[in-house]
Image (cartoon, rainbow, N blue to C red; front, side):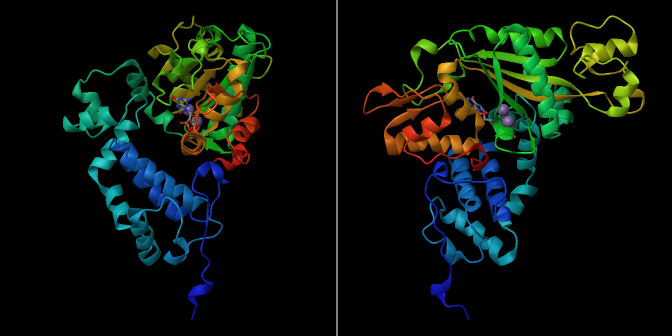
Length: 411
Ligand code: 8DG
Ligand code: MN
Ligand code: MN
């Protein structure tokens, strides 16, 4: 018999940005179940419910031991009745009927497949489902007009659903670095996103680019994109100025820098580093990397099409790899962001994630400190001024938070 008073009751701080959340945790099954309900809510375009489930999942990830009894959860933040019901179900029966029913539901499956296409959000997917489209084939057959992103997303669907490895991320990092220093010597490239948090795989690769001299980074993105395009590395790209127009967090965006912050959502053409095949190709550039053009021309002895996305080259029909049933390249999603050095620390913090950790930082700043945090700046509403920072550590200090390193931001 266990005396109730001996049950260890867990306790964690309310905000995910106050907690250290590593990649491994003691409650994977529970966290995974709640994450699936979060995903389902997001797929239904119910972001409020989605965040509630994400916060609950993050609390479970932060617990020091596996949960064995509901009593241990008393007083924990972010666990509403709905979440507690799901947890109880799993503790008692091993599974959650709601989670299982969601996984089996045709609507969830269709929303997941359709939003799994790069460029397709929850609203578009819901519209297509109302038109009776549940699968990729039905979409292809429907004659619906797709925008450029969605066309690329559909074309490279399978590749973009293969996890990107750290080795592939590093290879792409070398290419991006070559592009960046070619067009602006002295510019710097940093790997951000999940890989900076220590993840071994990811759904994309995220890079932040800056230059130590303020202002030198202006106009950099179009040049980097042109370089990458000229070398045949891009299957798709869309460059947008100032991603923070969407921000509704108040004055966290310094007006003077509105036009300087650029990002590029792209799909890279990554040559597979298969040693056997590389040897067959023979011709290697000085750093061991071959550009898509090199591969194409060395195999076909014809002038390469300047547009790598055209079928002759991109689909690989005339690649020798096609004969043996596999291509020599794959498509990989890559995000590039350019930041002036004065905003670099904020951009680095903002693009390292996790998404929930970022959201919690902004919530903490707003509710607890009367500050507005963005990927550009930190504004103190009480002092009516921007707070400068040249490192992530300084930003945490401004926010009155203990510094949490990237590897512990996996909320
Ligand atoms: P994964 O790719 O390995 O699956 O995970 P991830 O690297 O954590 O996710 P991500 O979707 O690539 O996002 C990385 C970070 O980028 C995330 O913490 C938030 C940030 N981010 C976006 N979109 C935007 C945006 O529009 N503005 C800003 N400032 N940040 C963004 O993903
Ligand atoms: Mn990422
Ligand atoms: Mn990304």
